[in-house]
Image: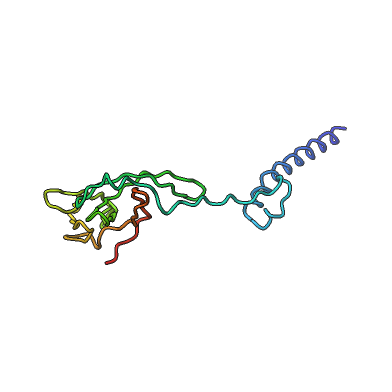
Length: 173
């Protein structure tokens, strides 16, 4: 009678161990082999992957009338960006120049050497990088290094009196 009880307890403990092992192993196997995931029906209805939110290429940045002629103005704007499944609301800036009433262009504030933020020097009439003394002309050209190329440009357009900016593009050397 004692050995029957012992055999029952050993079988019960072994059975519980097998159930626990299966409960831990099965999800890992399904995760590691995606082809099995499509066949698995025990998790409820299969859901289609969520579509990635598209970021608009153009964002509203400022009223064109608020930008002075012939002098760079730093403009701060917001852009939504999809990073994997996460949508990020970024706060960005650009240096906007209006050489004339009809013309406008925007420059990235990041130095092309190491990405430090450039600032406009009214006394010297050019952009200065505080980190490694690169200097850039009002149109973004390199005046002195170590910056390897001109400041990146952001496509700019005017729609209904509002400045819209696109995604930064590397400047043509």
